[in-house]
Amino acid sequence: MEQPVNPYGLRMHPMRDTLYSELHSRPFQVIQSPARITHLAVMCDEEESQQQFEHLKELYHHFGITPPLVDELCYHCDFDKLRIRREKHMEFTTYTFINTDIEQGGNPFEITGLTPLPEGWLADIPGTVMCAFHLSVEDARQTQELNLPLVKRFFEGMRLVGSSPQDGDARVWTTFQTHGDGFGRFLIYNKQMSDSQLGRLVQRIMEIEVYRLMCLLSLPTAREINPTLGAMDQKLADVTYHLAHSKDIDEQELLSRLTDMAAWVEDCRARATFRFSATYAYHDLVIKRLEELREDEVSGHLTITEFMTRRLTPAVKTCRATSNRLEDLSRRIDRVAEMMRTRVELSIQSQNQDLLASMDQRSKVQLMMQHTVEGLSVAAISYYTIGLLKYLLEALYNSGIELNKDLIMGISVPVVIGLVAFTTRKIHKRFLKMAIDQVAKAESEKKAEK
Image (cartoon, rainbow, N blue to C red; front, top):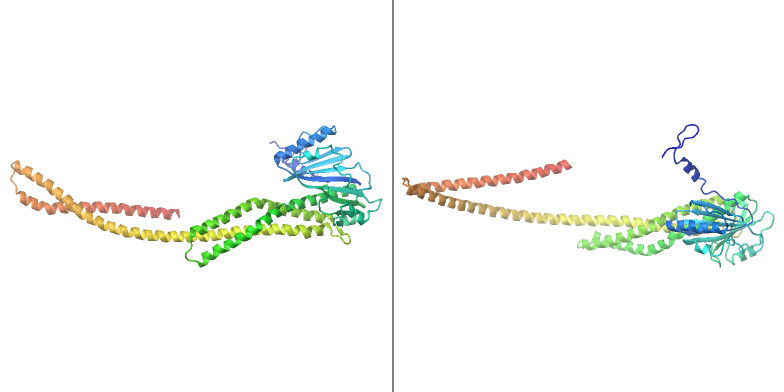
C-alpha cells in the first residue's frame, strides 16, 4: 500500500489516520435536561450484527431519511426529537434511544426513549437482549427534587440505591432490578451540570449497568462447575493415596481414571476460560467507571459503588476462585499422571530386563546346541566327503592305476575331518566378527547423536 504524503513531504504510516480516528470512534453524547433515554445491550454473532444494520435501515426509511451504506462501530442517527446511537462491541451491540419530546413532571417513566419508535420495530431487533433499562433525566436546576416516598413509588416500592455523583452536581436513584415492564430504571436529577457533563454521566451509568451484567455471565458456570470440582478433587486425592501407600495397584485402571478427570477439567476450561477472562475485564471496567462517578453518599442509602463492591465483587471472586481451582486441579492431575507414567515405565523396564535375561539364557542354550550341531555337522560333512573320495579312488584303481586304496583312505580320514573343522570354525568367526562390528557401529551412532 502506498503511504500518504503530506505537504511537507513526510511519508506517513498507512494506519496513522485510523489510529487517530480510533480515539474518537465513541464520543460522549451531549444530553439536554429533561430527557427520556432507553438503553439496550443485545448479544449477537457476526451474522446477527449484519442483520441489525439492515434492520436499522428500516428506521431511516420510516422517518424518510436516506440510510447509510456502510456499517460502522458507532452510529449516530438524529430523527428530530429522537436520537439513536448504535455501538458494536465484541460480544454485543448497544442501542441508545434519546427522546427529548417531553414535558417535565408526572411519572418520569411513563414516556421513555422507545415511545417515538414505530410499532413492531423494536421486537424485530436480531439477537438476544441481555440488558434493557430506562433513564429519566430531570432538570433540578430550576425546580425542586421530588420527595423520597414519591421517588420510591416510581420504582414500584423496591429498595433504592442512591448517590450524588460528580461531587454532588447530580442525584441518581435506581434499584438495579427489573420492573413491571421488564426494564431497569434510573432516575437522574441534574442539579448544576452542563449538557456535556450530563452526557458523560449518563454514558458512565449505562456502561456500569451493561458491564456489571456481562460480568455476571460466568457466575452460573462457576456455580455449575464447583460441586463437581470438589468431587474431582477428592477422586484425585484417592488416586494419590493409593499411589503412595499401595504396592499392588492396577496402573492401567488408575491411568484410565486420571484420563477421565483430565478430560473433564479440559472440557470445563474450554467452556469457561473465555467467560472468566471476560468477567475480569468487565469487572475492571465497572470499577473504573465507578471511580469516575466521584460519588457522595445520600443519607440512609447505599451508593452505587457500595452496592457494586458488596454484591458484584464477591461474584467475581467466586469466578476467579473457580478458575484458579480448575488450573490447580489440572496441574495436579498432570503431576500424578506423570508419576503414574514413570511407575509404568519402570515396571516395563523391569519386565524388559527379565525378558532380556530370559532371552540371554535361551541364547546360551541355543549356542551350546549350535556348537553340538556344528560338531555333528563336521562329522556328517567329513563322512560324505570321504565317501566321495572313496568313489574317486575306486575309479582310479579300476582304470589301471596301481594304488593302495585302504592306506589312502585311512590317511584321508583325519585330513578331511581337520579341513572341514577348520573351514567351519573360520566361517563361524567371520559371522561373529560381523555381529560385533554392527553392535559397535550402532553404539558409535548413538554417541554421535548425543
